[in-house]
Image (cartoon, rainbow, N blue to C red; front, top):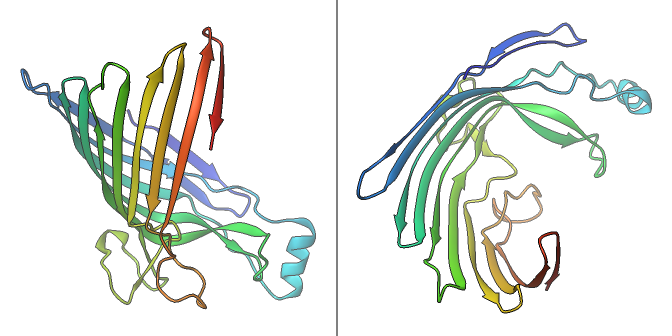
Length: 242
């Protein structure tokens, strides 16, 4: 279903955008495998007002100027497959987003607590995800595994066309570029409408924005969560996390 938008900013920027989207799925008989695909365009309008008052006066006093923000335009496609087995399932998907005027943020005059929106000329976010959910164990427990691999490069200012992205001197990384993300967890239903669950989360580290720290990515980190919960009827529940 296509969507249409028109934006007129106080700076005199006029933008027209359409957001056509199409998707389809195909279920294979007997196997019950489901293949799916999606393609779409998206437009996101920027905030009409980004800075005013004393902050604007401080910028003018330092001979700084602000240029109008243009809306972000994304082109996205996805495809994947879902494979059921017993009462578990395996799901795999691939995605790619090409963005022009990609929204980001930047600090004002190296101030660590004051940020305002900026746009990056072009960005490309692509990756794949895998989810595995086990069959029920003794009709009470289930184990799941989720893994994601993602790349998020951006164009430097002198580049023009984001669909020609490749790794090289003309490209840098977005701040949310994180190559590997892994979730491993389980849930087990206990008597008296209670349950126990656990989750292990691993991430390989976001883009390093501090030139004083070596490496293009921060150090990986791992967290472990343990939860105990109990339901009281249909409306109330209590959960303890560690």
